[in-house]
Length: 116
Image 1 (cartoon, helix red, strand yellow):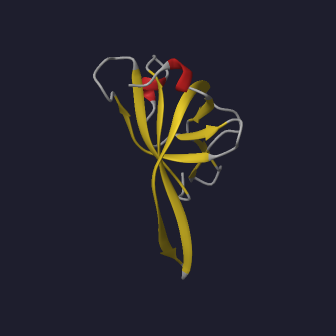
Image 2 (cartoon, rainbow, N blue to C red; image 1 turned 135 degrees about the horizontal axis):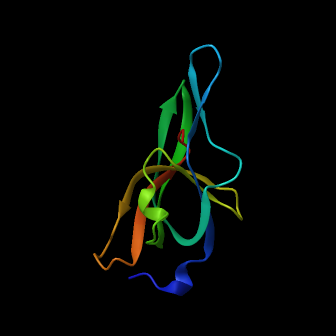
Image 3 (cartoon, helix red, strand yellow; image 1 turned 90 degrees about the horizontal axis):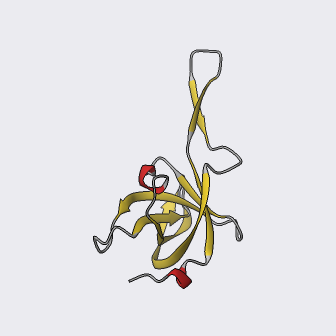
């Protein structure tokens, strides 16, 4: 069970935006400013390494826990999360999940070291 005192990280959530490049193509990118910020808990799960272009790439899996509200219920894997104090960027892999069916918190499975 998560307690309010454990929500120590200021986390910004960024929604990917689509823009037309005037050549008939659609480009997607994340804005510089988050859609919203909330306080949350960051828990490291397990890490790993992958080989990409003959180079070893490290990645770390995290669980982000935030309070449930009307903004956090709309987050999906197309979004990106960022620790606004430490500049850590996470690609959201899944969520939102209510871990204990209490309706108080959402958990998101996130990963660093991969494309967001």
